[in-house]
Image (tube, rainbow, N blue to C red):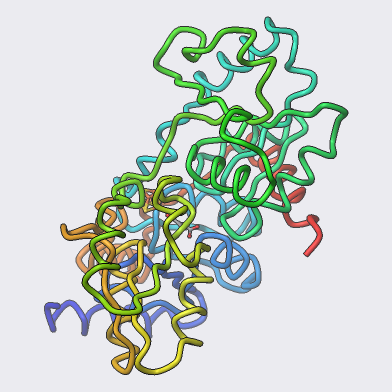
Length: 353
Ligand code: CIZ
Ligand code: SF4
């Protein structure tokens, strides 16, 4: 990366000292991650932000929903900054509040809303988290989706779960961890009238999966798994649960970003791995573990384009603005949304384990 920009980022960070805390998501570019005070997945970063009440500014190198969660979990005087406002998440954008409210109306008409517990993946906007908080539901992450679903099914007799917005995480958890069948799951398509489902299908379902997916993890295919198994001797396939069900079925290990990192760190020298998650992370893991064979589970380039929007020029601009006394790109969740989103987040934090 541009040495002039590296020096400017360093100087701005030194000038701000303890007033700024920089969070870097595992999918961020190397040029940005080098300035992070901590790295992590969305859940860890939200907790790390909450543990820094003395920092006036939290510069969040990640995507919009993560900065919102950091704002919800930090104090009112702390300002959360997203260096590029265009860093959204296509999965989070697949569930809009209006669409979810329409689906809830349909569940009410079908006479089942009273037995439905909404659970949203962390990768969703603050207003979707607030919707879940208001309607007796919770947030979950890819590390605690199973415990969160167990909690949800225990909330009511004959409970059903409306799982937002990632159908793959919902299906993989329900079928591979909870013992449900594919027939217990239906997919609500917000672009079709009545979700594309009959009232009878809704009444028969245990899991109503929102039709959302990750544009990065959704691309890995079962055919590539077969190909890598045929070409790399003793390869172990390690994937994120945002991958399609058919890919997860063929994998050796499945887990969150933090699980993937720990698995590679603990792997013996000489072992072979093909990893199905975002490419910045896979490349960093390969560079950090030259004694292990680490391949990427795809033949095409597979970065998260919105994560990559946070580049060094945007980072320098945000940091230098703070030095100059101007707060740019602050992410602020309105108080009413924040209150209910916090309820849903707290239910997750209170889960056992
Ligand atoms: O796919 C993502 O964006 C993930 C895994 C985010 C996170 O950190 O939970
Ligand atoms: Fe969203 Fe997928 Fe990018 Fe994560 S990797 S921010 S889920 S689009």
